Length: 101
Image 1: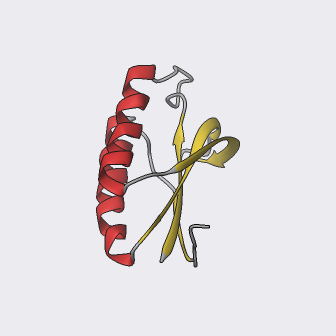
Image 2: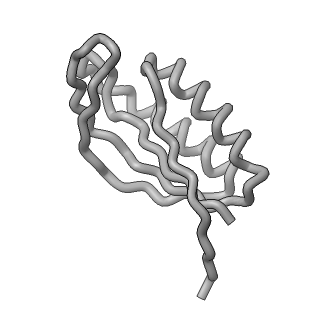
């Protein structure tokens, strides 16, 4: 199994919050396409290619899936990147073992 972690910003690079309806739709897509997720609030910063420092408040999503689902998630994140007008989306993939108890 693979554990995937990625962030979706709460606002665009000019600080304008994304509509609640749009974020709710993205969460619905995650649930339908990947069967579930865990989400938490996070803050961070990154240095853009233009030398500007961007400070983000974001949601960090975690999804555990079979390796075959990674390409589908990458394609979904590319769509989200374009929709939210982001320069890039961060995705971390690691091996995991999970059990329902």
